[in-house]
Image (cartoon, rainbow, N blue to C red; front, side, top):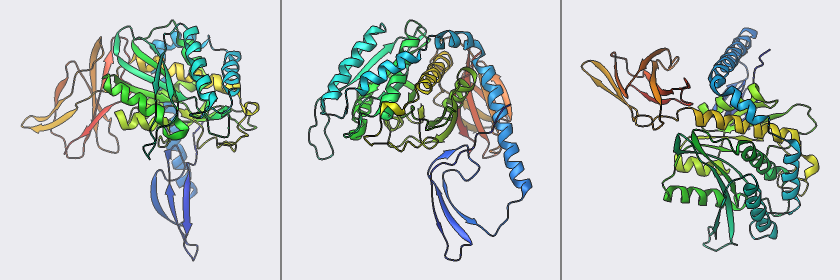
Length: 435
């Protein structure tokens, strides 16, 4: 039976001296039963009725049901391929990656383990059949001091239909100065390697870049260097996943974790990947700051998804010497790799988000134009519009990259996505509104 996802993101609060009101700041958005990212004053003397609570739960239940139905239909064209790829996953492989990297001890920039990990990652990607690139560089800190030489390790699975459209999946392999970082983030690196192994030999329509980042703990140096090189080389990066801290599950028999996202379309695809193909149970929080995902957001905007522990899993061993391999849940790491691989199969097989959407009033109504989809084999476009409360209320199908809508009131929301020859809709809407 479908369940309702309810979590409480991080909050800070301050009560009034009389105890009648409380000021609440919500740090992260998510599927919650309380306020999302905002600052609110709550009147504790105002009663919430049972009917109010039931109505809220009914809305969440309807949203969860709709998500499951929509994702089941969306994944159908690639469901068989997804199952074939995920069947290659092996928990003993995950343990092997984790144990080898953990035994290098701290992998902080300048420590011997950092260079050992770079060599191991290069050899491991090669063993899967990739030709990895080692991106050597010397970071400079905020005081303009040069740090030790280090490198990202990057492997590429070239796309068959849209090779110039790139999806990046990443994790950082370095750890803190006093820890080997079994969870932070050797677990993410182990999942990344198994994702790369499962997908090796199965080229997809768009290109996938597997990126093992250095220097996250020192200041996101590796991810920012990757973004700099990608921009210099004019890579067209249209989506990114970043996994960080995915192996700790406390004493729970469940496999819970958090989608940390900036893009709601990618978030929904990851939910679908989890409940259709794995045993992982995912909640979500709109959060990316302070992680390698922030470098992607700064470079290309809200194209980010991925899995990371907070706020659902708060590992008490975070940045401690006690972040050890004995606390890892290896089946959970494998399930995260499967969600990641399934998400990549879907993203690369469906149209990316459109660009250049513009709505202009004229005598005939509202002229709508957008940049044609860069993917080959686009069949048509879906144009949806409606009020803010129901923005996708009315839908029409358009063959070209422009159309004229009827005269619409100011504030009307408009969304457009492409549909390809497989019948797969774009994973996110391009959006605008009527002025």
